Length: 145
Length: 291
Image 1 (tube, rainbow over the protein chains, first blue to last red):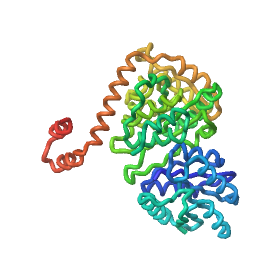
Image 2 (image 1 turned 30 degrees about the horizontal axis):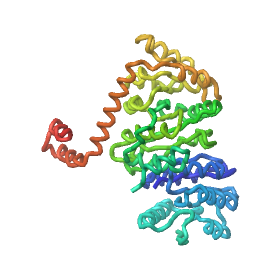
Image 3 (image 1 turned 90 degrees about the vertical axis):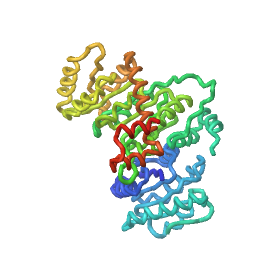
Image 4 (image 1 turned 90 degrees about the horizontal axis):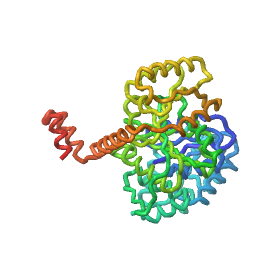
């Protein structure tokens, strides 16, 4: 898959995002890392220019409630319904449902294993190959966790 | 099957999403069929190369701003190697191009070398043609230069910028690979660090042993401090590439397309196997591939 890894908003810590980016590369994926402090508008433009299939968002700042829904909405508005969004960082359990209902397909918190993320991407690819929706506008509600 | 004609029309009319999708198809090996009445290519292709860590992406960020201020658009194709082991790639050039995500005048696409069997070379020419057709005036191609691969940039670029840093000694490697003679401008970046003036001087002096008329200009720049960028751009925009460049360009295009055809050959694996067991010689293998 071609995956954009992004750090939205005011959050200066990207060790986690970099570790994930690297392990996805080692798993055979093409990963584009955006760098820190990107706005939702910038992120959706990067996904468009790179023609990525998936977007990994890493946020530790607590602003996911605002940023993630905005990014998902922008993807839908600009015709990128097919892009799969997954999330990592500090996302409290009570916010998970809200994230999923905005179109996120998986959430990986602290302690997640990188091979689990790779398995998630494998399953997503095979679902996509068989024509099942995995994108941010998908209707069928499939999610990893 | 995708309808290339419909996508092309939409991309031509400024639809960024469709332009981006078309680039993916070209990357995967689709042939580009521009309309017959398409005007000849007008864009200027600037090739930027140099060793890892000398500041290519940071400098490209500055060049993007330079053109943006003049209200000119710019498309960047940033090429990074893919991992030979996993086939994956980590494309991180955007991190240092902070002007890259800022508006309609800028389009940046990261490419890995391993996207298709024949390598990136064969699709790069059609990607450039597509961007030009869709109205991108300035096109930048960024490659990591580490020896032989740099020379391929000659096949695609109209003008070439070679970047190095102070006291790295890599320029000697560049000299060995022949790229320095092909550069239009040699930039010593990080001019704010000690040793940069000395590095520029030693390159100038080694160039002075050759043909002075065709030697590239050597200029000190600090991409970080945005110092010297304006002068560098004036040099690039006003230099005339020598006639023999066109000849080398055609030759390099031929070689890289030959390479990609070889790598994409369905017989390749069998022939490599035969070479490994010693049942055929290298000459036999070449004859067979050329057939």
